[in-house]
Length: 228
Image (cartoon, rainbow, N blue to C red; front, side, top):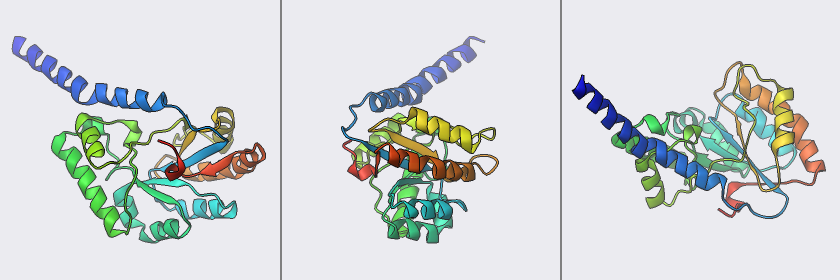
């Protein structure tokens, strides 16, 4: 029993030092950063591309809005045409891991392999990755070290609308976006995954919200225009 208790204590301390504390520190550093001045807001999309992304691209094109897409590498590989359309429309394509696994549950070798394989896939698609967003915003010591060595800024968010939830609706998403968004905010939405066709609800919500944001004087920009 004593040996088991010692083993569990060592495991817990290792997890705290390797994953939990670094992830918490990284989030706090980002959330408490100084935001740029002006009326710019930054639309970003995670977890795609998917069968919903093309409709989203058409909506953004209609309003001449450029966004930043944090793509899951394996999904990008499956939707090469959509990636090409993103590039042609002038959007920023960034990375959101290989398979959307939580970094806090990955060891050193798995973390390295996840990022290395992701970058290879994106390179084969003609994308030079300049920004990274970890799934759920979670990191570990290995990931933070690699990102620093590769000069890949870890981009989180200011505004979430919980648009991935099965119980949400386009009205709820729209209300949250309008209520929570302030100048300088990075908005995180999703064009892939989610339950009950969640990305479709996000698109419907944006059809309502984008005109209202424009009426308020907001200017849409991409992450490469952000002062990180």
